[in-house]
Image (spheres, rainbow, N blue to C red):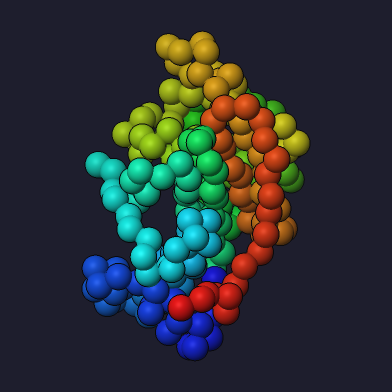
Length: 220
């Protein structure tokens, strides 16, 4: 998400008045820049999908503060970590996306607090030298699923179980709803060696298209 000043200015021009005011409330410049670039790119991409100028994109917000497009069949979701942002778009399907930059943390302690018993057991069985990667796969899959559902973090993270397998991302079970796992598809996103990303979408399997974009591609 790193961008030069010209690109940042172009992104800011795409924002509505409320978004500019929100940007100005950030205390630290890097957080202000990330919001401006992130929201500016989102408006640009949505404008292209909808065939309207980016400034004409109008958001509504859920009770959890998640932006959405009223009266449109396109769903979207955004996640960012550090200087990387992921955008997910789907038509006529719920979608959630999540990315985490890999960094050393107390993975077993965090897993014990938030993961389901089956996830904790699976993580404990992973060889130590790849345990960190397995933890982040689990975490991002759980986050993306909740975002796809539009529920926010009021749903206990230990009330459902996802896979930790590198090549088979999936929702394995949900407490009290044996049919839920069949409603969602998971796909890994190529984020490079230092981050983990995943997209979750409802309905039948579909092709996932990945594309890199930079702030310099913003159209004012």
